Structures are given as C-alpha cells and as structure tokens.
Amino acid sequence: MIKKIAGFYHNGFKNMPSWGKKLWLIILIKLFIMFAVLKIFFFPDFLNTRFDTDEQKSDYVKEQLINKK
Image (cartoon, rainbow, N blue to C red; front, top):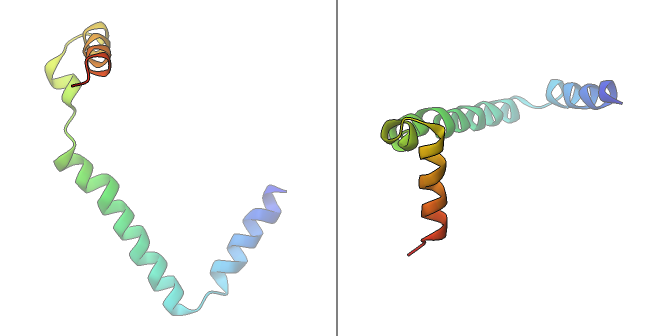
C-alpha cells in the first residue's frame, strides 16, 4: 500500500508541467523561510534563557496558564 501511495505521488510530480514544478519550488522555499528563518529571529527560546531546571520551567508555565489575566 505504501508503494502504491509513493508511486502515485512520484508519477504525479514526474508528469507535472514545468510551471507546477516551479510553483512547488516557491512553496518549499516559502515554508523554509517561515519555519527556519523566522523562528530564529522572532521566536527566541524564552524558557531556556530565563530558567535553569525543568522544574522551574514547568512551574512558570503552570503559573502562566492558571493566572491568565
């Protein structure tokens, strides 16, 4: 069954017109930028920079969830 599914996608991409392949390349580049580059600059590792132990991290998260303002 897995071979049939893989063959389905392989044949689909092989028979795709050139504009479709370019579109998929643009989509993959955009996803890479969103998940790799933006994560580095806009989503710093907040818990690891402020707390040393896992217990302190979990206590902070619990406190933030319970005491929502």
